[in-house]
Length: 508
Ligand SMILES: NC(=O)C1=CN([C@@H]2O[C@H](COP(=O)(O)OP(=O)(O)OC[C@H]3O[C@@H](n4cnc5c(N)ncnc54)[C@H](OP(=O)(O)O)[C@@H]3O)[C@@H](O)[C@H]2O)C=CC1
Ligand SMILES: O=C(O)CCC(=O)C(=O)O
Image 1 (tube, rainbow, N blue to C red):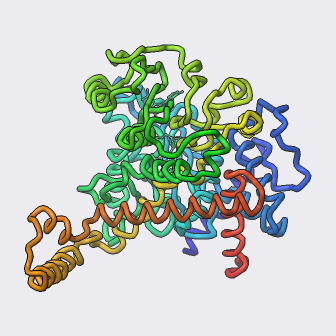
Image 2 (image 1 turned 180 degrees about the vertical axis):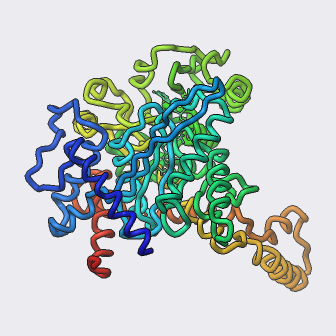
Image 3 (image 1 turned 135 degrees about the horizontal axis):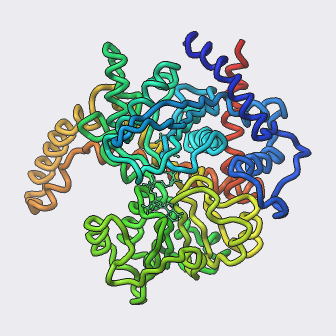
């Protein structure tokens, strides 16, 4: 722990320099906002700051504690060599930001994208702090990024980059089950997590809990069932709640239930793809999907045939060209299509001041981190569009990551110790009932009634409980404090973290 704190103080110098470079501003009640739409040049980090400031202005938390909660504790910038398959050496730039250490470990994904920079990483790390607080997951927030376009690198090259990135973090004590736990994000998945785990394990050969240094791992490497689907399923749980809430539905003039509602989804990756599965399963109509270089629009009026689209995608690695839909190369127009729900599930700042006036969805459900700029939010709200905020909507991923981390620390999977016991107990009860009633249950009913809970049952149950509790808290806070759902989510986060400092005090 002492080593960790020393390192934090060393890297915090870098953080200070970076903050100065990007005009980082501590929280101030007088700070102008971009909600009037005048500063379209504002960055992702500035949008996060504006959202924070809006909540801070109605919070009862003291200004010094607000400044503490808002500040990014440290950012490390890494530059390391990659020997490409051509023999040429390239310098790779990468980052890890640890936004808040009020709880340890810090937690957050790692992305690979050409847009990655220090500021983006800091904004994403801040969102992780607030998101974890909203869903009451006991982590500080962090995020990592590697500035490459992963499509331009071979598997071997990506493996070398990830392994070197992990070893650079390990050298600085910036990764570990008790320190900072990585996870998938945009451009990374379970394969990258497996390389991270293996590299960390090689460097910490006697560390019993090494596999808890990263979540989102393949099952063979200590991953948990359900993590891949978790972000999309968490979003779906919240959508279901929205479509059951008469009052919220009245505001957007929609009837109850997901069935028959129309959805446009930007991004067909982990989050977008899984959200689509659940929405389609509930009878929602996916009328358009956007990828980075094109999109498809349904022409049947029935919504896209998702099982057929999945087969097509698995063969072609793209949705464009899907024969049962119209392919469109200019995707901006698709984002602006009339629909009930628009789900941005790709990158930040996709809905900005310029295109916001043309958005015709009734609801924007933020699956991506920060897809709506603060200036755009003001415009959407003026047009009566309800925004379901990222801090809540995409928190299913980190919630199940938490379960994976716990399972790794326990070294035994959920259900392993209890499943058969539950089945034996239930079977005894069923037998007793049958004897008493002098009647036998059908074998089908018997199977259903006696089945014990598996790992996946526990994960789904934990995720549903987490998302529904957070949904109700955000909704009730918005009602009580007279603010929108995003400000309510930030308020919950701020007040939970402030309460934490209140009890723990400030070190030293
Ligand atoms: N993975 C997770 O568990 C979590 C992810 N998130 C957030 O969700 C978002 C998506 O992450 P994830 O699904 O993991 O990422 P993936 O890399 O799995 O998928 C990203 C998808 O976005 C598409 N895309 C990229 N750029 C654009 C663009 N300009 N317009 C339209 N589509 C685009 C990609 O298309 P193509 O394949 O053509 O490049 C791909 O379909 C990110 O903001 C991430 O931070 C939030 C919480 C958890
Ligand atoms: O699963 C995690 O730990 C973090 C996922 C993530 O990066 C995010 O929620 O943005």
